[in-house]
Image (cartoon, rainbow, N blue to C red):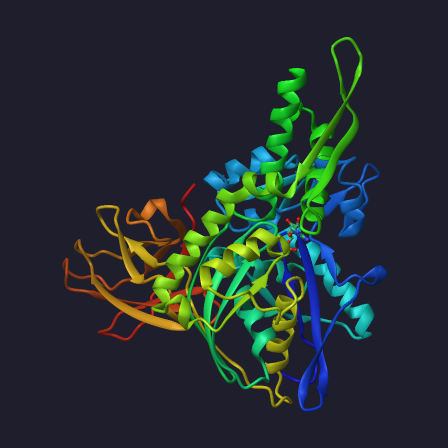
Length: 511
Ligand code: AMP
């Protein structure tokens, strides 16, 4: 790669952030965050269309969210790469006010805003485009390449979807790297470390944990795990449900069906949650939230204490710690062997999260990285290392977050790559035809840790065509499964006797 700028982008569920390396300073790469209007380094990952049909992205979209909840898309990253009928999509439909519907063939999720239908790639593309424009203006050069981060827990399909989003706007996603790995880079590049670190990343929408061994410039992921449906938004929801219950108990009125009231409660819930990280109690007052049947205005007048918030959300923190324990076992390390615990993601600012982790690991989390900026910084460092004219050479040894395998005749999963298998990785399987003159071999590939294949996410139905005619069992097909450094699967099949490559077509059939 030549002497062009490759920026690092943290395309977050709630906020996004971009950074680049401007060169060397005192022998170390100097990373700069790219500021947005007003000097903020993060931009809300929110897209909206206002009543005049204008597109709004970032702060502008967030500002009008309350007034225009139906046409404001937030948290869409949770839907990326999911089939329309998955449980997660069903759950999302209940918590968001914008339209979420299946695409024509029922395979993908479409978003409906202002009577316009958008794919999730189009939504991500618009946010990426905004980040790219801001970066191009700031750096005064066109930015066409980026390293983009994704949660470690993202499947092959979700990773592919981010690459496709880049393609839509002519932004080449030169490499996808995992968010925790990026955070470890931000912490460890150029420090000559020999440490085992835990990256605990609790952001707006997802929870990710990775255990990474740093040996100078080698960053080796030992194990990883997470919950794609656990983040700050669930802490907000716990508060919202409490407010709704209390209000209904007092007035008999259910506010959950009133979108404007819900938006106001949601907004204040998040602000109060953030306040309670810095103080012990905070008022929760919303005037004129609704009216009685007699036309009397009603207010919400409550108080939240930090203790109450902690009790409403302790099960969410328990869930993260259960995953931490499991991932630790998988890494083969004990809590004592962990040198540093790093916190990433805005929700880790909640004091009880830090206290619980301190108890769990027997040491306080490190302040070595900035929770909101570390991921973009790591992505920028990695982007810089990809350029030819740099001395920075980092090596990432990552893993796949969930098993990849094929569906056997009995519907069970035949695992080809186990969970936490190192990547890049390639494996071969040899099959034979099962009927005379068979010309095609069809294989359904899934990703997930469930024994029944169709309980996992289908990556595609691969059809290998052009098989040589012959009696049943006489013709062999050698299939190569190749997971690249980004965790994306490519498959190829050939006839080992003739060396001829077979035609491969892929489609997704799971609905
Ligand atoms: P991220 O996706 O990393 O930007 O994290 C955003 C999440 O962190 C949102 O759910 C925020 O409400 C939450 N958050 C940000 N700051 C704080 C804070 N000081 N205390 C608790 N949660 C916070």
